[in-house]
Length: 264
Image (cartoon, rainbow, N blue to C red):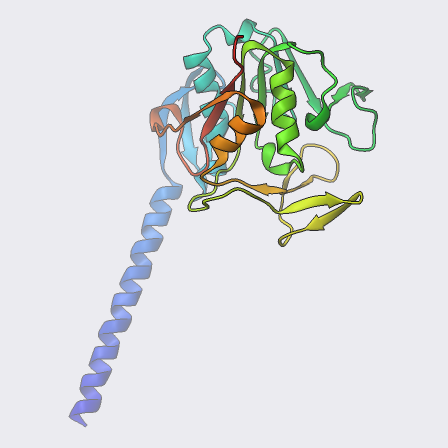
């Protein structure tokens, strides 16, 4: 009998510890969800309040003024810091999901890709451009911007080369792309074979500003990403990692990559 009582006592202690742990975790989560801070937003160029609306900071750490998210603020922080006067340069953005850069740039253009339409044509006021075969002349832009686009391209080596072609000497491709942690080598998840998609892994989709709203993830990038981009583009790539709550920049997969075109 005594042994049974001792066992019940031990089980009670174990359950109390589990409940205490769960309660503590829930309190921490609630504190996280309620967290906010004052800072400067490089997207709307003013003091603001940043608020956390969920535990996935990459998409749930918002500027209450312009609703920007960390990777968008990080791109414009890099532009403001390393490309001073960028808002007067010739800039093209592929597949934008917002107007945060367009608001400040006087020589801004953008394009989306409509697969079944003529490349280079205007579709309902939007220029149709395929990154793998751009229709722009050589040396057209000072900056070319893509945000979370390269993981949705079947032939990123062609896109990297094309972007370098349309950049002016000394110009730069400024972009974001999820770079997977602990993945030593980049790999395709899907490819085109005889005009059909061949899935090399279970299909994964992200949001898309056009079409059916779904963009297939075609590539996963790993530790060799910068080397691959350099090989494909012929440019020099720098990776920027910033964690600064006073700028609203924090979270996973928010690195900004800059590939510069040589001047000669």
